[in-house]
Image (cartoon, rainbow, N blue to C red; front, side, top):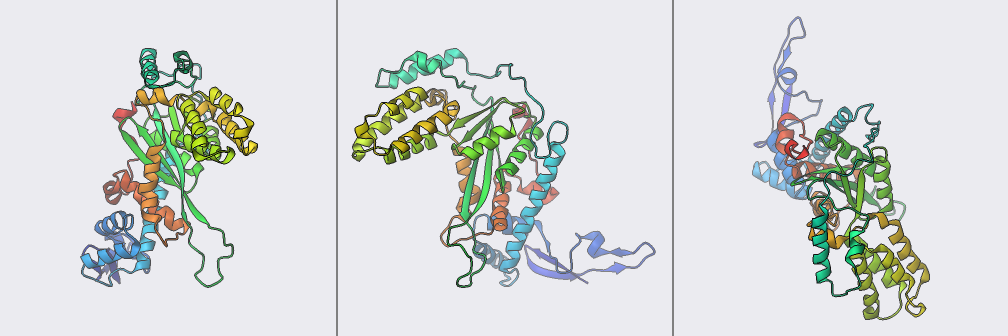
Length: 421
């Protein structure tokens, strides 16, 4: 029977041989090469790298296929649907491997079936790697020397309840959801039902320890949290202090704290850009006056929140004259938003001077690299399987593990031990 191969020199087939024997004999199509199904094709490492990991994750399927077949001088070698299926098949293999690794690492009795830690870190033990008070005080003095308004006192900033970790001492984890346009179930006129825009969602996580990082993608927040837990276990970071950065999405925040509530010793920092954007948006809706008049109030809110003074920001909103308020319900939303996120609003000014992170920018960048760059283009629509497949392949490439996967069928799936110690 013919054995079909898709590789760097084109799509071709050669004859396999079988020798009968008392123990079933020897078949080159089974014992010498990878077993194929009836219509299966063996894909070489060259094809998988250039066609899938380097091709489909950068270019549209049509462009990747055209480049692939032109390179092999075989215009009809591989067809479009075959390349799409190959990408989904390759990504499914990666997902199965990661799921198996997670199951091995997150075993009872230390973790439950969803990967949540069941052990507890001693909450009375102080965090071992906090910035020395002298360095914090120096940063406070530097902040206030640049502040043109003299109404902020050093004691206010020094008394802020959110501690400042030492640079690169905690494991920083940024998580975010990214959506792409969902493909219509049918192209026939009138098909598809609802006119509402539907989305295919992917959850992306960026785990960083000192100068190294690892990118994870999954179809949901619980799935990516399980992978994060497994990555920490594989890297010897089960008991490290965890510092999460998010955009303030309430369901995501609840999921993070619910996942690690037994273990404890985690902190969450609200991304500065999203905080100021939310305040600007609500103030613009809730206040009266011209753009310049609204800007005065918005900038004062930003100044107070940049220094972590949530109480004073809420008091400022309370003290707004009735003549400046257009919608009291929106003004109440501002106060509720600040009150809800009070524990997660640090003194961004001091953190900035200490060169500590204030934002979830790393995961926003990963959203662009592994999802948006390829999938958010005009006219594109995606099935959930197709979208997740491309983001999975792009994450493997981003982590620099393509060669290991193609040669051995495994992923390193860990941060360097030297940095995990």
